[in-house]
Length: 214
Image (tube, rainbow, N blue to C red):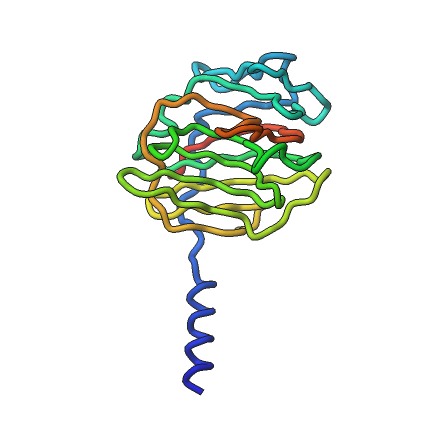
């Protein structure tokens, strides 16, 4: 009887992660890929950096930009995005069309490997993953429980709060991880690719929006 009670207690504690109390505030960057040109995705927030095509140019389609085996966008880091103090959220609309070209396919990153920032990607098993590098700590991974389907649009959000990161899929909390805010960095932004050989995302991205949390 005591063993059953302990099992139930463990299950209730695992399921009892509270949702964040912080809510979206000021928009600090927004790229609408449905309005992008062949080599430029303008930022709709005045004074914030645009994203330009990298070595391979993503295709412009009705629903956004399509990334295929090396198509990527890149640009300077957003001022205030990763200052190590400000909670924020990353909001993306994605539609994977093929499995990633390598171990994973990069969606969005602003990071220094094993030092600072974060990177968000799609694993080869069609789960989402995020590597977070907190100030003075070790890397913490946040992976989705849900397996995504090819050819389907998803609205994905990651909330970075002072003590936890939350991953939402189509408005529902999918998973969370206990971790502080990503460590401060001035690294460039990379979309559609990630650090590592052939870490390409194959699919459509409709938009990327970044907001402060308050």
